Image (tube, one colour):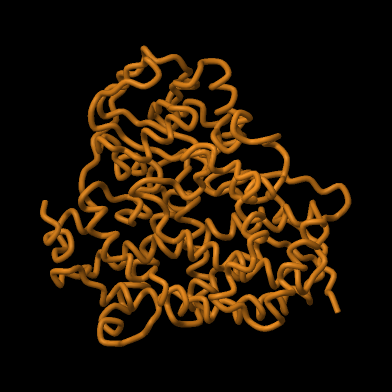
Length: 461
């Protein structure tokens, strides 16, 4: 299939109906466990995926097999597995087929679900929406959204950080990515994203009305309709928001995205800018609340930037804020597992891995490797300082944004919002945890605190 047909047609590939073959089950020579019929190890995985992964590594070594919802996966542990799969120098690992089993029907043909030449082609066009001038434009509205949100937080009697920052990230994504305030549509869109993400781990994967998988498909339909109806007007306008930029973006030969492409990319980008950022900012806030000395450090750092909105050229003046956000991503990254599907047979750590096999690698395993990180269970942002630089001990020691060709295209956008939001947060509030509060997490599909993370916010000044 040519690049031109992908961009200009609304045929099977553009519509997201390309068939994905069933994964090869010929992995029984690899040590591991199958668990229950069909459900496999779903209960342990959904309850404590990180704990299960550690147990399997300790029991079976760096290469092991598991089964979840009828499909076996071979896990390749450690930084070596991450380097092999994410750099993918031999083009042997399909991201589209890897993710298809979980999110393929809900976020189909988002940038993360494209492969090889097609992925490179789409990414090259999309890159225009993430260049400096675009980021500066998005940043111009960030401080206003954050300031307005934090004003509302002062009035809450039972403040829960997770739902509050989820509304903030949705409002910010709407302004930066869509160029509009969502108003009454916000709740519908938020629910659609929640349902689509939650459906990725539904145990019953047929669309029975009322169940999670069905709600996810309905959420996808709502999001498709929302974006598709606006495209004709966006193609005529000259707005600087991401949606309009994608409607006008072209490659060197003048080819542009089809309507289907724009819909697919916007659904995926809004999810990433909304759900994954909500998770990351929540864990950063927890780290600050549990370690108030870091609030003081960030507050002193923020004072240098003044009281007004943060300017783009001031971002580098907040290195410790970046360390805190990085440490939150290291300890509680929003994507702890990355799936792929092999295209050809290969060998890893002396184990033969057949073609057409589902494989998985874990940034989380690298992020807690005691051979790389000093006391990895401890919240210690200084490990990212130039003096220690533990994250540079291996190319994939720290990879919350993935790596290689599929490294997150929005990583700079995420860091900008983190700096804008955390700066305002420590400037305006002292942050504390209620007595006896522990960090109980729901790990999947995207990590979040089970109780919404109640915080005590004491206004400053």
